Amino acid sequence: MKQTFNPRSILLLALIVVAGAMRIPNAAQITPWSNFSPIGAMALFGGAYFRPWWKAILFPVATLLLGDLAISLLVFGGKYGILYSGWYWIYAIFLLIVLLGKWILSKVSVQHVLIASVVAALTHWLLADLMVWIGGGTDLRTMQPLSRDINGLIQCYAQGFPFMKNFLAGTLVYSSILFGGFEWAKHNIPQFKEQTAIH
Image (cartoon, rainbow, N blue to C red; front, side, top):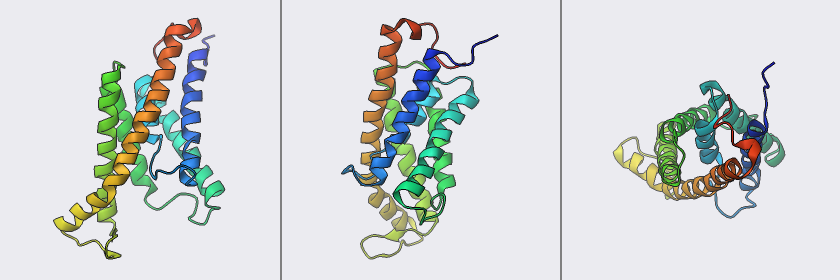
């Protein structure tokens, strides 16, 4: 009978779950940087290492969902509902970043992880802030709705830029931990040397 889980698969799952749990201190504003999140790194890591494709999607998305539920219940006490407004857009962007991870990180290297992290942060910023603008976001200077023209869209992107920088920093830091940790284990622990992904 084929073994479903092996030490490598357990390590991959453990790394992504621990990274997902680190979202809770950020959501509780224990960390000083808003949007310094591991979700970009989680998506890239899942896309790079999990096989077949449905596992690359399932495991990171399940971790994202469990983290969202924990944040909703433990941090906010359920006052915003089970999931936040517009969650489906964030999940769609997250899935896109998983696919970017599968494409850019078909061969894992420091250069590819760096490129993928930048692409993930830019993708998240451009698409998430576009959805904010489409949904009638607020101009933080005037506390009025953003104008429904190119100026309003530019203002929305400008407001989101500091959050994008934090997202990029979080993606780089957590990618270093996830990819670095797994690659170190792969090259130094015999049980992890046989395969390159969960099958």
